[in-house]
Amino acid sequence: MGDNMKKYIKTLLVIGVLIVVGTSCGKKESGQLIGVLDRPSWKGINPYGMVYIPSGTLHIGAGDQDVRSTFVQRPKAISITGFYMDDTEITNNEYRQFVFWVRDSVLHSWMDHYIEDEVTGEQYIDWDQEIDWSDETVQDIYYQGDMAFGNRKEINIEKLNFEFQWKDWNRMSHDRNPNNRTKYIHKDKTRIYPDTLCWIRDFAYSYNEPMTRNYFSHPAYDDYPVVGVDWKMANAFNYWRTNLWNTYNEEGINTEDFRLPTEYEWEYAARGGHDLAPYPWGGYYIRNAKGCLLANFKPGRGNYPEDGGLYTVRADAYFPNDYGLYCMAGNVAEWTNSPFDENAYSFIHDLNPNIQYDAQEEDPIAFKRKVIRGGSWKDIGHFLQNSTRHWEFQDTAKSYIGFRSALTFLGRSMNDF
Image (cartoon, rainbow, N blue to C red; front, side, top):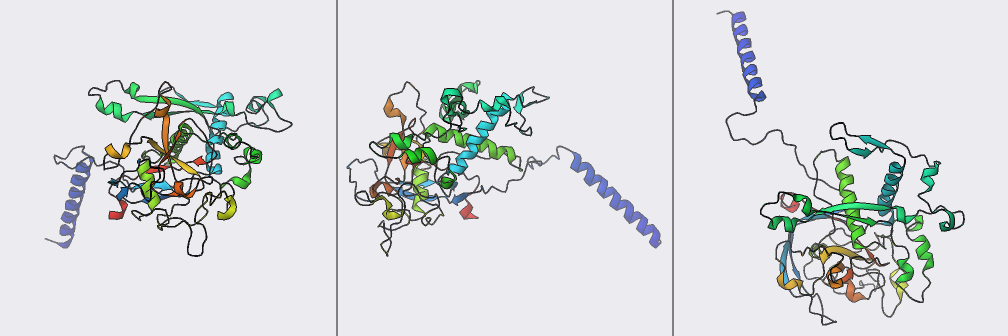
C-alpha cells in the first residue's frame, strides 16, 4: 500500500471520529449519569466594600461583669457559617445612592418613562431616558408653596417611598402543601429618607440643630455613618441593594440576598477571631499602651471629644479589627436582624442560631424590639463590649443607630480552600 493511500485512509478515519464525537455532543442524553452539562459556572463573588468572615466557633455570653445584673448573656458555644460583611457602617453617601435611586424612579414614573416586555406585557422603568430637570412635573419632588423655605430646593420626603418584599421561610417550611405561596410573600412600604430630626428629638435641652440641617445632606459628612434609619428602612435598603447587584451581575446568577446580620454573626465578626476577647481589638482595655482611646464613645463623665469625636466620626476611623472591620465598637450602634428576647441564649440552636419574628402592627410593643450591638458615640464603655446586648424598637430612628450589611457565603468555607 502506497504512502498516499495510507494518508487517505488515515484522513477518513479522523473525519469519521470527528463525526461520531460531534454527533454524540449534540445529544441531550448519553445513557450515563453525568448531570446537567450546561449549568453556569460559579466562582464566588467578592462584593466591593465587604470582607469575608470565615466559618468558625465562638463562645457567647458575658465578656465581663454583668454590671446591670440582667442575665441576658448566658454562656453558650455556637458555630457560624462564613459570610461577608461591610467593612464599615453604611455611610451617608452610600445610603444617598439608594435615596437618589428612589427619587429618580419616582420622576421616571411621573414622566411616563416605561418600556413594555413583549412577552409578559409588564412595564418597567426605562432608565436610559434622561430626566428633564427643567420640566414642571419634576419640580413636584420638592417642597412647594407654603411648604418651601426661602428659595431652597428641598426634597419632599413624603414623596420618597419604597416597597420591599420578604419571604416567610419559617411558615412555608411548616406548610406541608404550599400550593399558594403568595401568603408567604410579604410586602411593605416605607419612607426611606433618614429622619434628620432625630438629632433634636434624642436630646432635650441641647443645640443639635446644625446636625439636623447638615448631617445627611452636607458633603462634609459623606463618609460618616448614616443615622436616623429605622429597622424597616435598613431592610428596604438591603432589598434594593440585592436587586441592584442582580441587575448588573454579569454572571447572570442571583446571589444570596444582602441583609442585616444576625446578632450572633455580628458578635462573631466583632471579635475578629479572638474568642472571649471583651473588645474588637482583642484586648481587655479601652485604651492602648500609650493611653489613647480605641473607639468613639463617651469616656468618663461626658468628655465626648477625648476620643477624637464629639459626635460620630468617619466610618473608617480608628484601627480595624483583625477581620478588617472598622468601628465594631462605638461610633454608631448597629441594627441586627434578630428580635430581642431576654432568654434567647437559653433556647437558640448552636448552629447558625437566630430567632426570626416579623412583628405586626397589632402586636404588643415588646414584640417590636430588635437587637442592636456595638454601642455608639453617646454610650459609656460597657456598651462597646462584644458581648453586650441591647435593643431598640424597630420603628424608631435614632441619631446613634446605623447598620451594615451581611451576605452569606455559598459553598465550602473559604478558609478551607
